[in-house]
Structures are given as structure tokens and as C-alpha cells.
Length: 138
Image (spheres, rainbow, N blue to C red):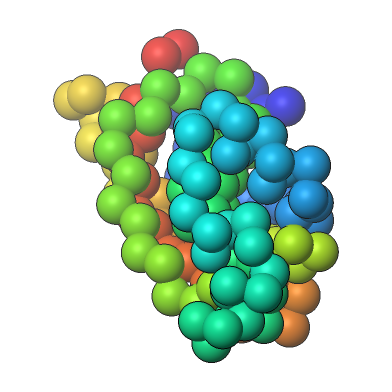
């Protein structure tokens, strides 16, 4: 876990990590949220709707933006204020996602950084993008 304080962060600073989405992740998310939409759990239904199979919950995919902030950029001292995310392409169980972020702005008055982030699959296809505002509490 990174432990950047505000003064150590520079505009242009980047961090990234990768994760493979598992059926266990999907099932845990369903259990936590109660979202029983068949697009996420019934492969036959998902194919009938034009997808390759069960689609990973968009908010499960977007939850990795929280990991980016809380573990990598800035890490331990982060306080996530705002995430504006967009879902571009579907994600499927077994996809390996790379979550990347770059600091684009710093607000010295409030010690908040702006991070532009993307999530790409194993084929390099962007599946989500976001802009985050993250306070740094140390």
C-alpha cells in the first residue's frame, strides 16, 4: 500500500494494477447488493440479450477505482470525495482488468488531487473511464 502525502504527489504521477474478475467476485457483489438482474447471473439470458455471457456488474468494475485511490494513488491517506465514471464496454468473468490513474490537478487549498482513470481488459480495450477527486488526509 502506498502512503503518499499531499506534498509527495505530482501532476502526471501514475499508478496502475491488474485484477482478474472471478465468479466469486460476481457472486459476492450480488450477495452484498441484492442485485438479481439476470444479465449478471443467467448466461442463457445474457446471450439472448446479445452478450457473450454473464456481464460483470458495472459497479463491481467501478469499485476498482476505490482500490486505485485507497491502495495506490495516493494510498493509505486517501479520502475519496467524488467519482464520475462511465461504462464503455461490458466486462466478463475471467477478464483481467488493468486499472490505471494519472494525477491531472492539485488543489493546494483543500489538499485534493484530481485523477483521471481508466480500466482496460486483457485485450487493451477500454471498458470504463473515470475522473476522481481525492482528498489526502495527511
